Amino acid sequence: MTKLLSEFTVGEKGIIIKVNGEGRVRRRLFDMGITPGAEVEMKKKAPFGDPVDYVVRGYNLTLRKAEAACVEVDAEEGKEAEE
Image (cartoon, rainbow, N blue to C red; front, side):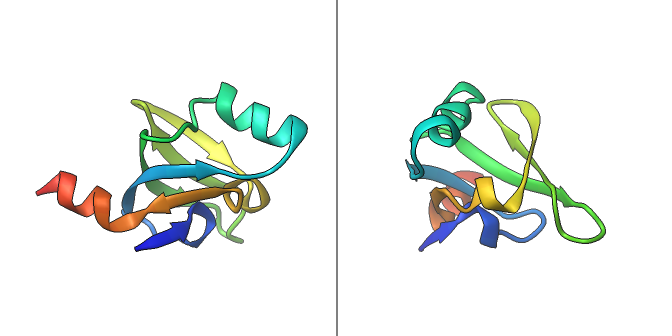
């Protein structure tokens, strides 16, 4: 099931499929390790929902919802990898 990273719930995992966006935003996401094939897990959310903490490539990464909305993730893929 394909979802946007911004739609994840705490503890949910997945494999990044595609990074959308243009220019600086897309480049910044790539520079932070948000690339197709990487596993991502949502760890925690700020009290008002923004920003959100994820684990990508073994490190914690905090993204705003607008940035996370640029990332398409296969949520089922992450669940299968866990089993």
